[in-house]
Length: 604
Image (cartoon, rainbow, N blue to C red):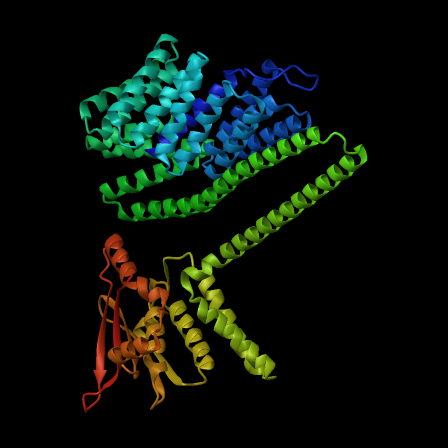
């Protein structure tokens, strides 16, 4: 339930920014009054609910303007507002760094201000997003102290609600309900029915975690009725998710699925990625309960893809490193201040020194500091540039790594290069032509679960031809296909046979010293299955393991490691009888003479 609590907290935090006042700041010609700042932040909030990128561009333009005008008060509030907006889009890393930046600005601007409460409330959101629950609770309790000190009832309500969310996430559900009820009492007194309905929703959520079904049912239905009858508004997406859980708990799966699908659509509309993720996971589980395993699998794949994309945006390790740098920067600033104070004391005690000498010394100091700053900035820019380039290259290679052995790719390219360097252009052209065709087949079929049998066989032909070139004809191979398989366009799971072929080649045939390797592939079918036999005359499994131990080999084909899990998953989801059997072959004298693998694939 992390995303639900985080979103509620985020919405409430942003509302607090619209109605909070700063106790610091002095009227200057270029300072924007608080009453003019409120509508600007409110407009940023309305843009966030429609299109997050537009909202960020708008708030960035405000930040730039306030920096130019040296309006620190407005700069702190707009920076904190951007931190919230980024949390709304689950961009926790950037949000946390902006919260630290707002805190640094506030510490130099005003040591005792209501803005501290807002900053700490905002800082808790990305900490929660990174799973640092206890720190989120600590920051929110600190925020509650500030807003209570300044008597701001709106912010007290928000702090209580957020404490309810965070304590629930760390398992203190009774404490959580107490915070939610205190928040609800404030909202009931102010007749804020929209937010009161959210309070009922939060209380229901905690009771469900406590497995108190009667209390959960009472409060979730009360939340729904308050939204519809008192607040006169549609039930929000996150509440629809919990209503779906209510119907699922009582065994009424159809309305649960309908509510979940509608909530996912609502979440996509407002651009809330984390809520979309939660909805996809719920939809997948509901499809599974309703025995619609294909839809369950498809929905789960959508969830995994989106979740991977979100993880790539947020890096906890990078945040930890940056936090460390921020702490060090603060320490350096204190040291610099102490040095500055010492220099000032020396200046006062040595007034007899000439004004010219002092001026020259200060000039040299400022030049040195400027040069150091320039070097640090240049190094940081270069580091960021290198990181961006690395991320780009890793993203471009991701699709190939998922299905094709990178060693095979590099070795194929290197072999073509050696042909070119030895002026054997015909071999180089033939080799690269096969490699290009193989790569095209990989890419064309990379997103398909099932591919034509003819494509799989064509891939195997290209793969073995390239490996034969690479290993200088150390083996021969033959692929035969029964006529019965040519009569219809049969399909099999993509890249299912290649791991077995690669294993036979690398660990069996290529370890031969006394004979040429032979690899035979034969495809036929019976009434139920496509049957593929992979037979090699290699050293056998037992000898291959001995050789591997002697050479201290650590490489093993990636696809082979996962083939059993993949076949089990396909069998479970689609009720298929996928199987393979490995047989050790021996000659007349009982010595190992190779390996035979039989793969059985149900006819589709």
